[in-house]
Amino acid sequence: MSKLKYALFTGCTAKESTPEQMMSTMAVADKLGIELIELTEASCCGASHLQDYDDFLSLVLNARNIAYAEKHGLTMVTICNTCQLNTAMTKHRLDNNAELKARVNQKLGEVGLEYKGTSQITHFLYAIIDDFGLDRLKEMVVKPLSQFNIAPFYGCHNIRPSELQNETHNSKENPYNPTSLDDLIIACGGANVDYAEKNKCCGFHAELQAPKTAATLTGNALAGAMDKNADWMVTPCPLCHLKLDTQYHHASVAIGREVKMPVLHMQQMVGLALGCSAAELGLQHHVSKVDFV
Amino acid sequence: MSTNSITTKDVTFKVFRFNSETDYLPTYKEYKMEVTSEEVVLDILDRIKWDIDGSFSYRRSCRHGICGACAIQVNGRATLACKMNLHELTNIFGDELVIEPQSTKRSVKDMIIDKSDFWAKHAQIKPYLISEIDEHPEMECIVSPEETEQILESDLCIQCGACHYACPALEVNEQFIGPAAFVKAYRFEADVRDDAHHERLVEVALPDQGVWDCVKCFECAEACPKEINPIEKITKLHNMLFDQKVFKNPVAERHAVGFAHSVKKHGLLDEGELVRYSEGNIGVLKHVPVALKMFSKGKIVLPWNMPKSDNLDEIQKLVKSSSTTKY
Image (cartoon, rainbow over all chains, first blue to last red):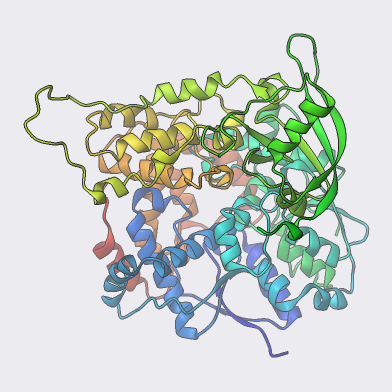
């Protein structure tokens, strides 16, 4: 099998508030022999908020990011659920609306770029599952996570809207009963924890606008995992990670109960199973201390 | 469909039972049945009532996905009982299905819920055309096909409540207007004959109840049996608030605008500056405790170290030429 190679769209948090996400992505890609060409030209995806203010501008910016992946002739891989949603949604809208695509390309033409629609867009989680393969991953596990009950937290924008999800990934995931992250936990040797909140919202996108709503949803998620005896949680989304890892105090106040547990990025979990060190995976950057490594 | 393709399957149904007049707590009753690939969930509700327990209660009427009466939840999934095929559900959830009302806490009897909150939210956004009608018009009031298209099929809503009771923001905040009423608000906001745009948009803009409290989870898009995509209409309402300059929630408005500022300056989002700009210099102080914890773990980039996208000049040029909104 030839070496897997992708254009990496890091998103903003990997460069700022979740440095460990960037570190663990590169460490895991290295272990798996996946080549990632970083799209250093890429801008913010708008995080579904710029879209509320100026939808057309966000389309142009996301189309520009994809155009750079197309220049490399590579599939774009994202490491953030919301980047995945906004980028894949842009692609979906432009590929299905010639008039809109022409309007966007007229703008991109001003800076010598063109959106063609030739690159696919996938999240790193699905690149590992669909392209690399869990059987291959299993064979490479040197330090299985067999002592842990691990609660998967999927993050909305990888699983909803399912129409977009099914168009983008080979793993046809049902948003009411997603399995990809559970399968990944099992492949890493861990025990997957089933709980009601695993496919629910963490509240991140309303953190400033509706702090009580956001904190309650975060609290419910942490409490759900704790009540099913999870040792820690794992998520493919750095925004969910920020909420669950750093906002436990507000979450505890909102639901009237102390909630806190280590939360790992999906890449960190895979990295641990593959024998990466805690430092390589940036576990020292967590606010909710990762106390088991 | 040819009859020889019909298959059968044994399914266990765990059915929510509650009578608000006699019970303190609900129970789940188990019914094992053989179901065919032709049956929908409503067939099972009927079989329970007709063959097993006549006291079992649920709403049903049209049987054609038009009236919205039979909306329930199966394994937490919003389900219009008359449209949802049983085998489709067992493919997702396996052979044990949990049948519940849309909201267990609003159950009056079994599947029947008190939907008064749903209707109150509708009433709040004035779900009707508000217009000065000329009683003696001299010409037709013509709405072009293009203008009609702008309604984006929001008029197809059957008011089943699937999105409303699937919305997590509404679940934890009773003031939130919710996706179904937002769709209805959009339906009239996008109607060129309506004169109440500003009045209705104010309802939609207010903190705690309006569109800014949407958590962007897409549960509503997933739940809608008519594929109306409520969150698309919520985004349109956001856009309308900026277009019509209906500003009632400064933190939320600046939070959206802040992305444009940041992209223009750095290409990437300046996370710290976004919080400061959204909250203001005083409001930002409440974030200091968490920010200090994050800083101690290397999670805060200081302003002078803020990374920038390569070819930033391109991004700045595009922001200038492609912006369609002003704040």
